[in-house]
Length: 281
Image (cartoon, rainbow, N blue to C red; front, side):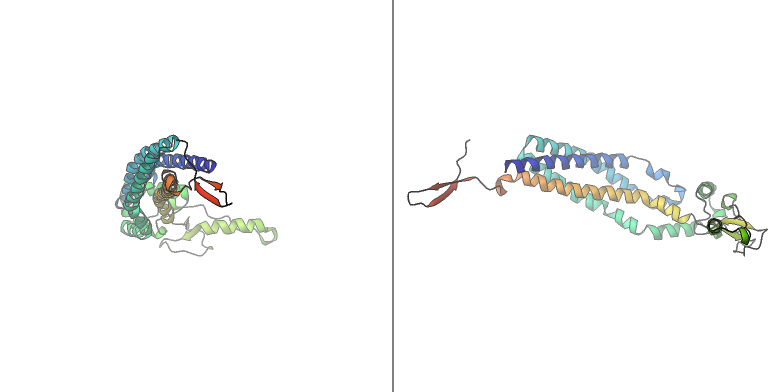
């Protein structure tokens, strides 16, 4: 029984240290500038997720302080302090779940809100110069054009939307399977457009090739990553916190669930008697 309790105590210390690490991660993410790395961030001012940052900034240091308290209580085997630690962590867990619940709602409504932003900002050639400049950078780096399609620029396609035309197909006699695959891939990433920006047939050679991939899905992935990261950190904290609470309660309430030692005696009539083993203290 003593060995089992020693393992339980060591496990409690390890879990509480993990809780301390999660608090440090919450502080690091909460005070980082990850939102500033979103391309064309000016588009998404009304979709700010600063509440998620505030949650991590507040609960991160609190988690670190309570974790230090829990490690000290488990190391010194102070049962009253373990119970206090369990109660405080449970209160923090409930408060964090209540405060962070809007993050899940924001994540669920993200696609619709972003689509509305895209609709409001088009046509892109009328958008603010800063937005056009940042979007041109994204189009050049990720080989995309427009938010939903190149039609978002109407008849004023920027140079960042243009792409190199696919190489002409080789003659039938020299055609190899590998060259077929490469030609098909090139045509799939670009589309031929005319003055009215409608797709044309490949036999027209005096027209422009533009990127067929829109930039909207790329922007959505950039925008949703910080929220997903914060939800993941909070979920990890919740799992570790519940484990730490269970282990601390098990150690703190040990006298209520631990089976007291007994000793057996046999009287003169061969009857076995069980009675609590006297304490040495």
